Length: 192
Length: 195
Image (tube, rainbow over all chains, first blue to last red; front, side, top):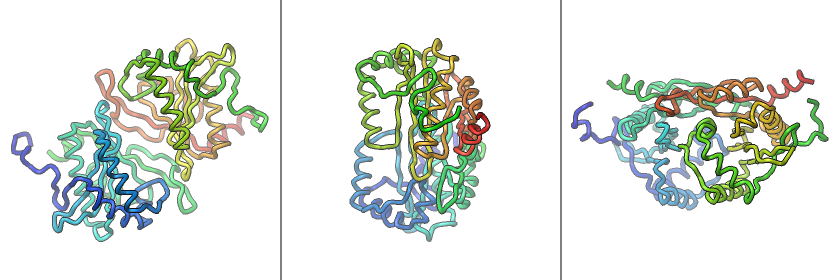
């Protein structure tokens, strides 16, 4: 890992998936299709689902790309097998001074749930965050009712850092939002 | 304190919560940005001194965001005696469907602290958030080196919920970032006891 051969490795390629640029045309199409699935949305976001149009989402992505803000980096996740766009992953609010970022991930295509695709994508992201962006830690939040995601994040090395109590109000009850984090040295030890 | 409709929402014992006065306040807030001890307690952004003109632009941004997002309440804290600008108080990142928000209180001048102004402000923010906005969860995020603030919020019923390990890099070392929060039922129970 310490020699220059490591630099020749494809940083955006994992075992099952690879990261691509967020192309407004294809990603907006996928996004609208995925978020029509209300369960997907409620696993992904705390805000209510919204009837997005493809045109609206495309414009939103284009605007975002135009801003070219180094604090936000967005990827499309494609399978190595057939190059299909199956999900999205975004770094949100990278703080280069504090060395921290939040990450959000969604596998929109249900056929790819529970098969290691999300975990593979998160592992690509951690390598990128720690060996290219040189961050000190990566943070995420996950909903109490999303056991599948919690298991996946634990596999990648994330640890629970606390519960934001009752901060989701859905289906007539309140749920916790769980904070998880991984430090660079913890990731190094896992990948030595 | 017994709360009723007659109890003013934005007037405490010592201070009032008011809108920003773009012309008069900019100079004072610009001076705050030169107070690095305060700024490092108050914000995780790198400290940076601003001119009054730059601050005025920020004020315009704040007013615009309040107007458009409906997710922000930004107040100037003023002394009732002498109408002096003492600090700022915020309810921000409101999520209406979940009933959650974050708060911030800043009183930069040490001479204005330890007199009950902060307590005054917090009481008003909590009452407004829980009894008018009908929120459920109010949160404050503090670096672990801000011990006075951690004690202050703990004293007023906030509980530690999250410890983001080593999330702050300041003064040559890393520190934890601590999330504290109070739920509406917890706040109501405290009010009952204090009657």
